[in-house]
Length: 305
View (cartoon, rainbow, N blue to C red):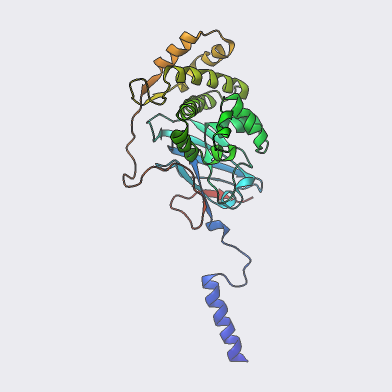
C-alpha cells in the first residue's frame, strides 16, 4: 500500500509539472487574438480593451501588417469587449505612407467573435460612435453604411460582417470585382479616418454627411482613386484642416461650393509613399486572422476584474 501511494504521489507530481495537479485553472491566459488596425494596415497604434467582466488590457504597437495581439478576456470572449486603438507619433499607413499619428479607431462590444478575423477601422469607429456605448447590432451598422453611401457593397457578395471584421479581404474582393465601388470605399474610409479622429465631439450624422460629400467629390475628380488621372497613387490628408477650421461645418451647411470643396481636396492631396517595413521579409497582410493559441510574440497586458 505504501509503495502504491508513493507511485500515485510521484505521478501527481509529474502531472503537476506538465498540466497542474488538482488544479481548476485552465490555459485561457495563453490564448491570444490578433486585431488589425486598417485604413490600409496601420503600423504604430496601441490597443486598449475593456470587457464586461471588468478586465482591461493593452497591446504593444501594431506591426507592419497593422496587427496587435490581445490576450486575456478579449482573446477568450471578444464579444464581451470593446476596443480602442490610438496612433503613436510614428503611426503610419503601410499602404500609402499617410501620417496616422493621433488617429483613433474603435470597435463596439459584440462585433467580434472568437476564432474569426477582427478589424478596427474608420467604419467600425463611426458605428461605435453611433451606438454610443450600446452593443453592436447589424441594423445600426447597415444604417451607418447607408449614410456613407456604402450600402451597395452588400449587393456585391460582401456581407456587413465581413466588411467590418475582415476589411482588408473585403477591399481586395472589391478591387478585383467592382473597381468603381472599390474607389468609392477607398475614398470614403480615407476621409472618414481623418474626420472621425479629428472631430471627436461631432455628431455621427455630421461626420457621415461630410465624409460622403467629400468622398463623392474626390472620386468625381479621380474616378480610379486612389490613382489620380495620371495613374499615380495619391493620398488626401484632412486631419489638420478638420481640427483647425470650421471646414466640416461649412461643408455640412452648404456654405462651401462644389468648386471650393474640389480645391480644398486638391490642396490637401499628396503623392503616396511606401514606408520602409520593419521586417522586409514579411509581406503585408490584408486582413485579421482571429484567435490563435500560444502566447504570441507581441502580446497584450491585462488586468483581471
